[in-house]
Image (cartoon, rainbow, N blue to C red; front, side):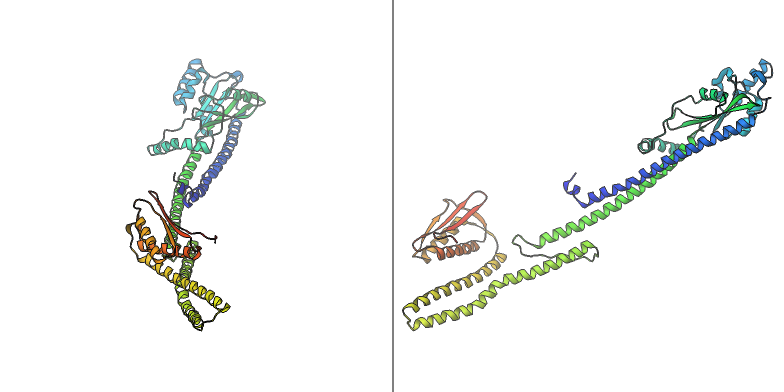
Length: 474
C-alpha cells in the first residue's frame, strides 16, 4: 500500500467510517436477545398448552381403561394401529414406535382438535404405550420462490455465526419424546426440556404434564415444537439487517471516499500552487488561484494568496532598494568629492592634508559601494534575460586573470587552473562579473605586496572557483 495513501486524509476517513460497522453488530446482538426472549415465551406457551391438553384429558376414565387394558380384540387393535400409521401426520415417528403405538381414536380425535400447526402432541399411558399422536415437526418443502432465499440463508450462516451464536442444546432423537421427561410426568412432575436436531440451528422444546383420573395418574401428555419459526424470523431480520447495512456502509464509504478525494485534491492543488509560486532563489514568481469556496480550505487559499501578494510587493521593494539607494547616494557622494577637491586645490598642508586624504579614501569606498549596488541590480536583470550557453570555464577564468594583471600592474595575481578545459553551461559574462567582484573585494583587504590567488578545480560533476588574499580575517 502506498505510504502517501496510508498517511493521507482518505485513509484516515476510511478508518473513521469503519465505526459504521458497529451498527450491524449492535443490531445483531439485539436480534440475539430477541431470539432468547422468544424462546422463553415459546417455552411458557408450550407448557400452558400441555397443561390445557392434560386438563382436558383428565377425569375421563373411558380414555384410559383401568389396568391399562385396551378395549377390543387383538386383531381390531392391530387394525387400528395400521390405520393410525397411514393416517398419522408424522408416519416416521409413528413407525419408529413399533408395537408401542396403540392409538385410541377418541384420544387422537381430541388431539386433532386441541393441536395446533407446527406442534406434535403425544399421549402416553402408564405402560409407556403411545395412545395418541398428532401433528408433525417436519418442516414443509420450501416453495419454488423460496429456494433463492434458502441459498442466501446458507451463504449468510457463516457470517451470522460470527456475530450471533446459536444456543447450545444437547442433541436428541427427533422422532421420539424424551423418555426421562415422560417418566417424570408419570410420577406427577411437570417439566420442559430442550434438545437439538440434525440442524444445529433448530432445537425442539417439549413440555410434559401428567393426566389424572381422580387422584391417580393414568398417563402423560407431551407437547413438542421446534424453534424453526423463531429461526425464520431471526434469519429474515438478519437478512434485512445485513442488506440494509451493506447498502448504508457502501453508500457511506463511497460518500466519504468522494469527499476525502475532493478534499485531498484541493489540498494537493494548493500545495502545488504554493510551491510553484516561489522559485529556488526565494523570489515570488506565481500566485495562488482563489476559489469561491466558503469552507476552511477556501479561507486558507485566500489567506495564502493575500500573504503571497504582500510578500511579492515587499520583495519588489527590496529589489528596487539597491537602485534607489545608488541613485540617491550618487549626488551627495559627488558633492562630498567636489568639496574635497576644492579643499585640496587650496593646498592645505600639515595635519589637515592627512584628514583630507582619509576623507577622500572614504568617499572612494562609498562611491565603489554605490557602483556595486547598481551593478548587482543590473546583474540580476541580466541573469533573468540572459540565455545559457556552453563554454570553457577555465578559459574564461584565465582570460579574466590576464585582464587583472593588466589593470592592476602593481599587484601580483597567481592563477591555479586545470590543465584541460572545464566545460560548463551558463552565462560567461555573469561568471566574469562574479569574479570581478571577488577580486575587487580581495584588492580592498589585501596588504600591499601580497598576491591575489585565483584557483579553479573541477570533477566530473562540480566546479569550484575561489579567490584568496592575505590579511586579517573579517
